Amino acid sequence: MDQHQTSPWYKQFWPWFLIALPGAVVIASIATIIIATRNPDSVVVDDYYKAGLAINRDLSREQRADRLNIRGIMRLDQDNKGVRIIINAADQARPQKLQLHILHPTLSDRDQSITLLRADESAYNGSITPLKPGTWNIILESNSPSWRIQRRLEIDAANRHYKIR
Image 1 (cartoon, helix red, strand yellow):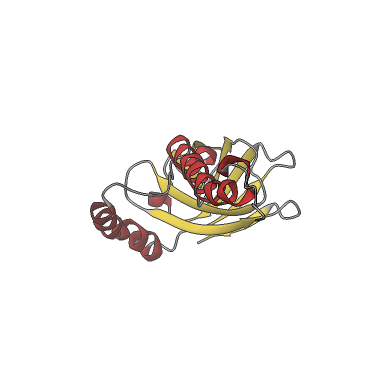
Image 2 (cartoon, rainbow, N blue to C red):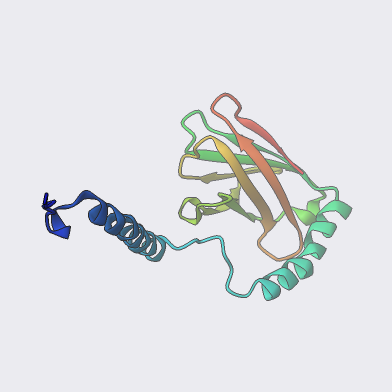
């Protein structure tokens, strides 16, 4: 009678293979949880309904800018550290200071808020952190909350002049 010798289970290939598959899933799940908790999504708003209502309330400022026919040109310096905005508006719509918000669509750590000071009758100057090429949301508003212009711009290295309307 021929007896077949079998080795213990822990010396076999298939049990370890079958244990490794769920083990890899557990390790990947733990890694995903660690990544998610260390890098939260900054785009998500806690109360999206209230944020949506606030956007609807603020549309009156953009409509006022349309009625006043406010237009502008944003010029970036060669070194991309300075910004000059020239606005075409009635005298009552030209305050001493303007607020410029430069917002990245997904990365809130790249957002900038700049106070622009009036340099002459229609030009405003300010300093910015250099912008990387890509899509940016621009909000230009008067210090008194009377008008606002929002625009999405595609910033590239070759162009230094952008229309704001």
